[in-house]
Image 1 (tube, rainbow, N blue to C red):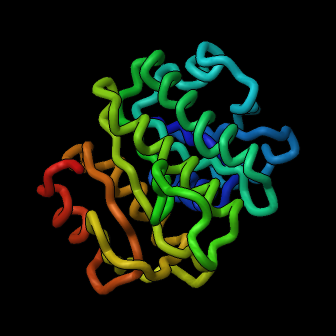
Image 2: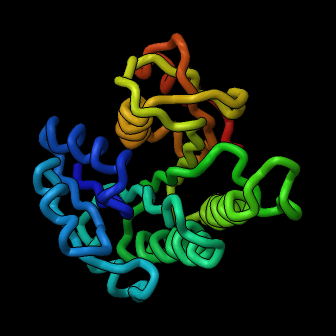
Image 3: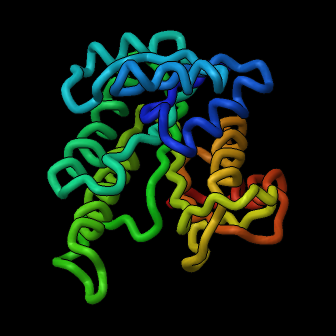
Length: 226
């Protein structure tokens, strides 16, 4: 299988690239800066330099040609303002989905965020205003993806991310409640979702838990899409 990952230099993306390459899959990561290429090569991935904030659908579609799956794991990142939440977390996600459809890549996995909600009004008490903008942007991207009949999509919404070693045990469900999850386990779940076509049409939350990842995937695979 060949997978193309948007946001290929992200912490989850690099972990996923190592997992996919480690089992012999082809994997390419789209990055914005040429100096990031060496980290992707070290992870076993092909680096593709392309700025999703300025690229055309046609340009991105060329990078997706021949792929079996696409993963959107890009994000404006900490320290970015509200404007880039819109241009990366929302608009670049829409662009990448457009490009996947143009290239004929049906399997598409979105790395979203717990509490993502395009209809979020104002700034809830105690929440940073830019984080509220982020949740709205991610929610809008999710809504756009879930409205597409031309993609076999899955939306994954992890809880608070940690750097702890992965456990291989998670709680994966349409609703889990808020908690944390390791980046290692997020990457492992992403790979398992790519392998399981029955998870298409699902929006899933992910936190740490007690169920081995293969069993967690099998359990949700029979749940109707949300």
